[in-house]
Image (cartoon, rainbow, N blue to C red; front, side, top):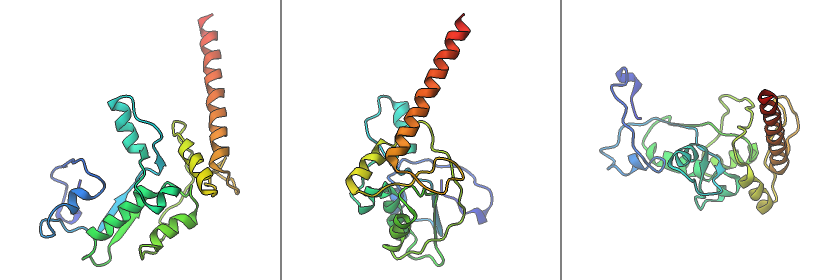
Length: 194
């Protein structure tokens, strides 16, 4: 949805399917609304398989991304890099334009900073926190990227961990936790059946 907050409350929401910002970029320059900021929370984990149902497809769109043919694909940042490039085109004639993205530092801070710097932008951290990895996130694609690039992603085992672990280690830990939770669930079911 696009709305100029200075004009008052949003009168209506228009939902469109688009590949990032193409819904706006496909308009003639005169027909484009004035935009002075682009804000996004874009998936950074590559989708590893096709979805079985429409519901899974919708879930995947919000959680996984496809390869974009960009250098940043090797860090899981290809979709974000494409969003930055499209944002720059949309914001080209705007003074003091801003691009605000919610990014995980899994590929490492240097990779994230390089993604912006290679497009002439500087980064500033507006807010930072450690968020637990969602249990249903398939980090297998990040494991494969690590093997292909010989560069480790950065996962933290606990909220206050000082040292990171690779995606390979994180995947093993997540699998172990999932198996333990499944075992506890089966034991609880067996106990309740008696």
